[in-house]
Length: 576
Image: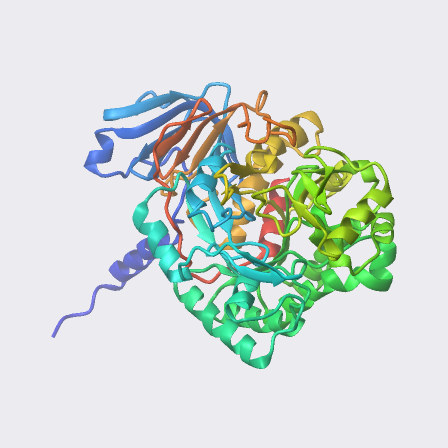
């Protein structure tokens, strides 16, 4: 029989155990001894010297050196870290005068048109040039597998021919990603696969089929459900709640392109229910919920109202609500969807949105009665002109240019007011999502890209921080990194700490700027001022150029998304 340990020994062992358990997985203690393996002490694969290292979670903001071995940050040392050395093939980067930040996390993206093949990889290459090291796709109701949608006698079908699990396996095995990719499943994809008609409510049988398909997606690593009721008003709140409950039962989240929030006056009378629908779904399912690209959906005085409504639900009810914004003033979308499929008179819609005709311009040529009506980049001049085009599509007399992949025709909308973006940036629960992608036209194989694809985070730091002064540099880093990481439960990303993933963006705060614009030959201009983007320890962007490395990984969700908006707000208030 073993004799019991002496009491003093038990106490010492207990204290040691408590101390060990209290050490976080990622730490930034630069004075701590280097407890690396012998191989690590022999050198690091990558050393970033003398940069301004900012880690919003711990409050570190100092000139320091970051050392990486493999895909992990192994050491952070104050100053130049002159005692740190590289392996035989290791590299040293001089970050003097530059900010060394955790890699940017993009909560709202798309994979691009799926019909011409997997565009996940091309979108990944574009996103990483904007400093993005992790992106969440499958938004606005469309899964990365694509969707089929029948409307007004037309069938839009951009499906890959792969099931969700097959697509995930393919992306994982091909290892062609420049950065880390995670995805939601879309209710519009599920509706199409279940045989729902556009604008028609789901039957009980169809909803049961959608839930069964969605459970398969969740088992394959989906982060949760995304809703697109704006694009298919047949989507019912009941279906949204049931899908949200299924997502939450598996630990997932939700996001939504809400139907409409047009003006504060109309919110009281008519459109208030669009945001309330999202809040009711969040409440009924107890699910972490992101209201997508908020400033793109709130017009004519409704942005502050929407932000206040979300914050009230968080602070008073503890609901796990958040939002994201694009940060860009102009977006591109389908014309007939934007005019509400003919359900609302165009002149009334434009009046309440507060949009003048010349704020809208074509993204491609359009024909009416087989005659040229407007050319790409031509602006509307009168409300009657907008009405005439909407009427022509409603009567099936209009079409986009040959080879167009749009449902009707795509137009540019320069309607996001800068003051709304400033208001949203000041809220800690608002993240950044570029709503971008790279697609290929199925007819001519031309690349289709929106400027915001390359102009989200570079614009956050170059325009909104430096030029406008909407928020501080430190707040912008918080919003781009730790805020979404905490909310999504990414415990080793969004941080610059020892033991965390080596996803790092190095940029010049004095020169970083977006260059892409909604003009011919300027749609795909990469940003300037981003010197290095490091993903899983490998340099993917060097001095603005892609290196050809593809160390990105598919991230399958295996944990419960915390969606703790109160924690995000608490950290923000502690730091700022």
